[in-house]
Length: 108
Image (cartoon, rainbow, N blue to C red):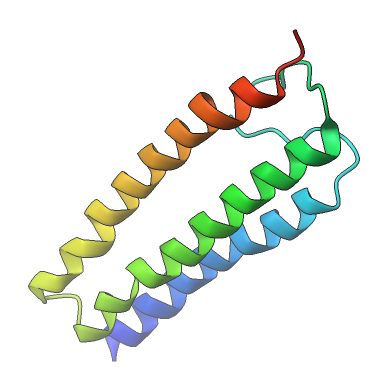
């Protein structure tokens, strides 16, 4: 039973990123990726927001998928997959933003 509750909570956090992706898709101003940091000067705001939205959406879906081993129970060895998977997915999202999105849409 506790595995199901853990998975539901995990899905709520993943759904937060999906909602954030939808809000970013329709935003008129450039969306922030980093907390407490100003957005650089963006060359094409709609395309930039769509790229960030896709990143948030993919991260949310991946986060929910990484939570499925929690259904086996919290004392299972499979419960390490969400922890390490989330860490790797977060690092990958930061790398994609910094190396691809920021480089492509920064005004020169």
